[in-house]
Length: 219
Ligand code: UDP
Image (cartoon, rainbow, N blue to C red; front, side, top):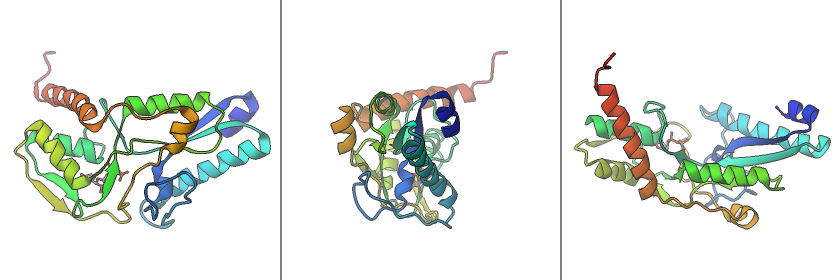
């Protein structure tokens, strides 16, 4: 893509990730933090691939003058997620709707900060239209433990599911929260949808989806 952008004199935006910070030792994460990634752990391929793509992006920018942008996307959610993609929100929602046990990994004290998809899209667009070539965090700094998140989903759905605890995956980051000072200052961007509002919109989508799955098709 960088080669094509160079050839076509196009602007290119790279979708990077908060995973470049690995299991972070500073909190919240600012863009100038270099991260704490285990290169040979089970998450290493994803994390290092994203770090390498950032390195290549900056090299194309510095050496070839390609107009590049790098967005570091933090946990995002919203309608049209796949129910079975394995991530926390769809897993909890689908378990709560079906009355199955809600599976929290570890003791649930690890934190994440969830951004509603519309806010993310707005941030990405603003970054693309800006002149900023350094990485920019786009995420919602509203931080929550995974245990509280599971409880929140369960209570919003009014579900009778039980919360159970399973083994924590290796190298699961303990904390994650974006410092969005750069996005605020340079792009004039900050999230507008809080988690309650965002979850409501997302749950409406999931409830309809599960209902449809249960109804046999008319055709
Ligand atoms: N998680 C969980 N139960 C699940 C799926 C995920 O407790 O069924 C935890 C996971 O271990 C992590 C957090 O929820 O600590 C967020 O996981 P997700 O896969 O959504 O995103 P990421 O790990 O990339 O932040």
